Length: 283
Image (cartoon, rainbow, N blue to C red; front, top):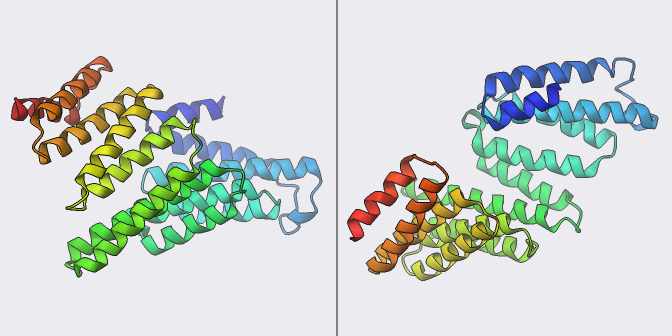
């Protein structure tokens, strides 16, 4: 029951409730392991090993909840979960923790360190088994996202243009490698990567046509997955590029499609207002 309630709180971004439930679950799983010699995890019987695995899962759950609420305590909890997974020889869940450590150092402001983030994503890539192509592709996608962040920081700090361009090219390369690894039936992942490639090429003054191509592909895959909100967003992205390319009729068509999708799913946020403004600008 507590696990289900946590999932609902996490889905609804009720971080206070999610944290309370995650701590309660961890306390329960820790209590179940009181009899275990934690200095000899490599010699456990199967039953006790499973108990430690449940404790590692609960530790991971709390770590992820705290990460979402920008609480830096997630760092040590991730380290502890990683230690437990490695001690019971669970390489797949250890790889997942490494991947999440990449998120921590990219997204938690108080501990943000993009070099550490990239290192953990690389370690996760190496740790995932070769048959898990989607997981490896997601690691490459996150490495690309780190490169885009480094590019933005380079621009903001006034670094020489070649420095920013180096990061941009690294992002594009990793996104393209991610596409090659992504299974052909992983519609959402394909859509997200194409969308991010569109964003990356948007930063290049000479590659706006490539940006448009990727936004169109993102729209196709989002439609295939029936992810209508995300599909509306990729249509807005395509409309913006079409405006930049002085193709107002096509831009209006994409903006109108986005507006219809936003209204169909009951979305009333800033992107809907943007679609309406774009229709006014291109009319």
